Image 1 (cartoon, rainbow, N blue to C red):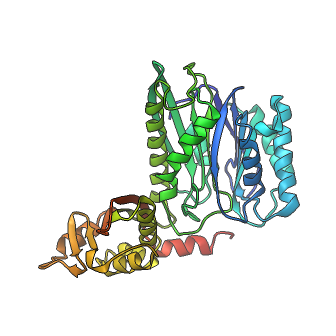
Image 2 (tube, rainbow, N blue to C red):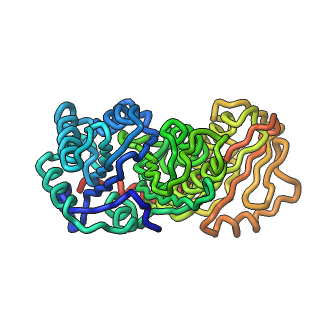
Image 3 (tube, rainbow, N blue to C red):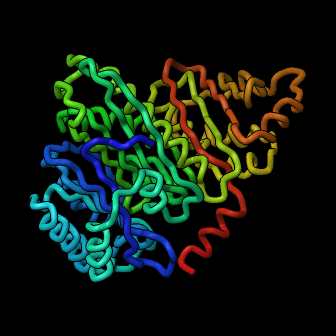
Length: 394
């Protein structure tokens, strides 16, 4: 992943858990960096999320701090004090307003973030040598099994601008805004309001279309930072030269990151794409797709490589969206297994079974009612998911 001018990552070990690895990430951002973000809709969100929402109103950022191993959620005033101590310390270090410091934490819920460890970790991070994005990605992870990062580029105002994104997430993943902790950095100059417009739109077709286990975290945050170091004329609307290209690059990087999270779903062995067409609206199609993606019966059937398409029928019917049994068609891979409410005449399960034995699974649904369409992504549900989460705190 390429360096981004104006964004300098450093890592340190705060010791939030008893593990021999770095767990605090500090990214210093150049003055004038704009920021946009989307956050969880979970009503029991962390103090970090609350402060993030407050700071996004200013549209400016000078630093990002990410703590791994402790979510600091459901920790009352002590949790808020910890976040405020972090923002105050970084603001003094950089000589900027506290409102330009963004903090995220991830890990166990209900344990206050220790301020002393956070402050000691920050002292180490301030003097650490800059690291690369892969090291930063490994540092923000918890149950992740590999570093997740993506890049994209675009020509804006005659200049090539770069985007680099890192993300963590493996469990407690559901699309009720964005997902997990994700950060996108670009050297393009983009006004904060337009950056927010673009990120919100990209979120709708990427992070808000993935699910691992239907659970929405208390800490989910995705932030985009634009340092302006590419020296392009600032983008403020789609009328500006290169705005379409930048929007396309942002969509691309969000989609890449979202797919990586699904591929690393806790205990996952298979990546599942569910395409729904023929719905009464795009939103309706998305909800039908998510009903299929979140069905434990569908996900375990895929894990067992069982061509049980009846479970897809069940999930469509329970979604609460317009559907007509006698207009419904379902396919696995390139094989149509049911059409117009009936199994296809002469249906041969052999190619479907072969498809399910692969790692990338495609399920198609045609509701036959309208022009609405959506694509969502999920993973299978294996016994390893139970093992990982049963032992999460030990």
